[in-house]
Image (cartoon, rainbow, N blue to C red; front, side):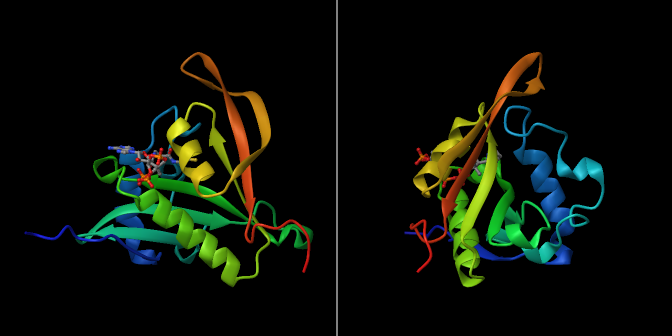
Length: 170
Ligand SMILES: CC(C)(COP(=O)(O)OP(=O)(O)OC[C@H]1O[C@@H](n2cnc3c(N)ncnc32)[C@H](O)[C@@H]1OP(=O)(O)O)[C@@H](O)C(=O)NCCC(=O)NCCS
């Protein structure tokens, strides 16, 4: 019996650039991303450096990434990490790679002493919402009719979870 290769998750590197651009183009559609892909705005790592990504590799191919940042540069907001992008290759979905990437991000947030991880997800993206709920995220805000996609208004959800599932210090 031949064994299925296992995905491997590692931190992003500048040399991943062309692979991640190609993946980003394959992965997003209007109902999962409100704008043209990050790619269209220049170098993929301009705004968020390569090291703030985790990359999933399967059999020598880049099959997923997660991008982490802070919602604002304010010191008073520095305890919050934000998932600013998550994508898995359409050909390898449903194998737990998305969950692995979110887990890698949560573990990293915990190692860095973060208190909370937040994200935004479109109301028209139930697959991603289910994944985030499964990983412990809850809706903390609902932006009604935030985007206009193909002539239809689409809501945006703000989701978050605490790094350790408690709300107070100690
Ligand atoms: C959301 C996304 C990252 C999930 O990646 P993934 O590797 O398929 O995630 P998982 O395998 O961990 O979970 C996917 C879910 O779809 C189910 N699924 C099963 N087969 C599937 C398939 N062939 N294709 C897609 N999903 C499938 C899984 O069982 C799982 O369901 P559950 O959440 O009810 O348990 C991926 O669908 C994607 O890249 N979507 C486009 C970009 C996007 O929406 N990004 C998030 C923006 S906020």
